[in-house]
Every structure is written in C-alpha cells, then in structure tokens.
Image (cartoon, rainbow, N blue to C red; front, side, top):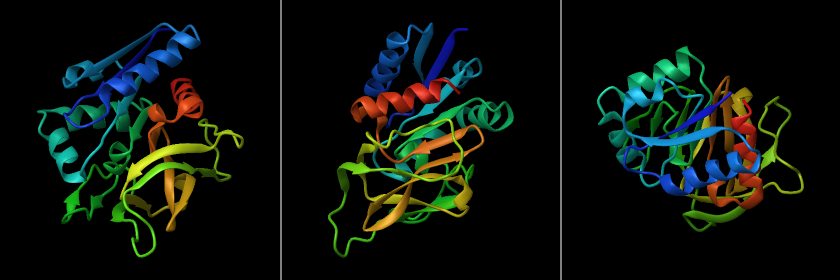
Length: 211
C-alpha cells in the first residue's frame, strides 16, 4: 500500500531536510511512498502520515499555521477525527500544547494538555543545542528507541510541561528532566530533530511510518 507522507509547510520549519529524511527511509526499505510538502489543506485529506515541523518562536509558528485558511480545521479532522498518524517535530511538538509562555502567553492547538515553559537557565546555557540522551519509560509505544543509540540532536530553549505523565514516552535531562517524546493515541511529538539525528533519527522515522 502506497504511503502518502504530507509535510505541512506554514513558512517555519526545516522542510527540505525533513523531506529528504523521509525519502531516505522509504528508499532504504523499498516502500512505495510520496513525500509531499504542502501549504494546502486539501492535500492533507488523503495522507497516510502527517508531519508538522517547526523552528523558531512558538507565536510565529502558530500564526503561520492559523494564517492558512482552513489548515487547523483540516488537521483536526484528519488527526483527531480520522486518527491519521501525526508527528510534530521541535516547535511542531510544542504547538500541540494548550498554551505557551514564550514571549508572552499564546494559545496552541490543545491536542495534548500542557504548557510550554522556558528551561531554567541558572546553571545551563540556552538554547539547549547539540546531542543529548533520550530515556524511554515503560509506557507502550511503537516508536522504539535503541538503548545503544538513544542520543538525538536538540535545538530549543523551551520545553513541553505535559500535564498527564501517561502521554510522556521519553525524557531528557538538561537543567530539569523534561518530556522529549510525547504520544496520545496516533499523535506523536518529539522535541529533538530526527532529521538531524543520524541513524537513530532515521530509525525513529521508520517506526513512525510503520504506524
């Protein structure tokens, strides 16, 4: 069965790098896949998988998303109602929260209960940039992270304060222990960049595409 992977383009995200990583994985496993970058809500309807990348500030990312007529509504129908597998990357994960406190207070999609807060900077450098370990917990998930290759590439200063621990699949220590992988049913979010995380990043993308 052909996979149609749709990467949402709302003007802020590492779009080309993400597309190449998904194409790389599809080619490696011989999957019949289309990896489409689009800013058109109608293109999302027939997706088998949806990816929401993001980089920069929460407010500008959310404004970019809501600025596309019908995009949030179409995403909600596909992800919340139709249960199409969804992956939010970096700020794309943070947009899943109720609200963010980055440069003021801003509303998010509210798909997973939580708030976006700044990492404590008393004894660490911000942004949190570079490789760091993701520790997985016992919560069941189809996104398996190898214990031998469990470091991923991060670039961020804010974290997802997830209200319900059952939705936290992985944590990372940087000043505090924060949620670096979250999941609620078909909705996944990663604070790191799998497209910049070498073989372990490609392995995570593979697992997502097997959902």
